[in-house]
Length: 117
Image (cartoon, rainbow, N blue to C red; front, side, top):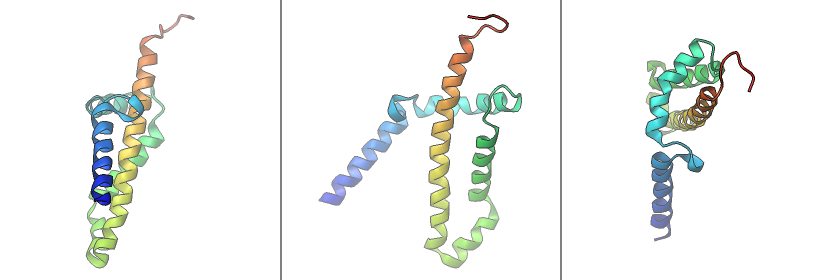
């Protein structure tokens, strides 16, 4: 009974985070839609997310690469733990960085280039 309650609470918290955002932040859909804009702003030098985006890209490449299949083939379940750790970090990094980008983007709308406010 206790374990079921803990799982229910965990899934409820996850559902709230996905639909309502973490700490009251933007919902998941808004964050995902912001990803291409964040990439473009970084590539054009407007946004300073280069290192963080590179780390996220490396984590994604690690999880989907065929090289990562060797640990799973050799160590079975233990080999999947490294994927779980990387995917968990990646999910947190995407949530944090998209929230940071959306806040940055909102401040950019209130700035008039060439004028001191």
